[in-house]
Image (cartoon, rainbow, N blue to C red):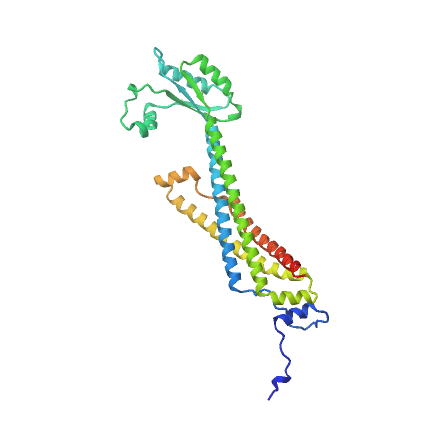
Length: 327
């Protein structure tokens, strides 16, 4: 029967770590055990927190992308269209004046088309405020002329305004600049708010990693202290923590980014199926087809990688500060 007392004891985790740090380590020495356990309750909790932070960050990025793309599309539509109003004037044939304004607008360089709205189209525009069944002949409303621009930069709006004022009675030109300025302001405000939210999410992630790193070091204080006192370099200890938290950060970041990407893909799929319904048309008018596109998905991946790298760097700096405090 083998004498158990004569058998060499297997080195524990600290013994394996010291075998790598101390000089004279044999080539066939057991593999080093990690300083921070690969699976722990604190590690899983931190990964869940990072996944939530990554999910929120990617949602914010997707929302900002949707609003920005929709704003650019609105601005492009508005810039390519101007409106001419011909107001009723006593003793003047408004229909003839509207026809004259249409011909002047159509003759301008850079204009694709110009047409006066029919009475039923004007009634449709006024229906939300005045109701249906209107007799347009009894209402002194202006005649509207929609002018589509082929090249907005080639159109001389100042010259067109001067010709309308000189040749058409009661005519005025609206190039929708006020609406464009409002859309730009809204888009810029949305981007600023989104960037601010992303900054808050990153700050919360950094704080979570700092607390988790301190907790991991507190639970492994004896091992860290022994390694430090026997001569282990701070870079070696910090590298072990950095590797551990880098994997946690990447796992959590990719989980959160995948969840956000899946959510946008599902919403885009269902919206495309309900595009003919009134609700779907309203959402499509505001946010397009609710698709963030390749840029949005690449941005989500970049956020996941950034969170992983930020987690590793934060844990490394925290370890260095802790080791400096015990010297």
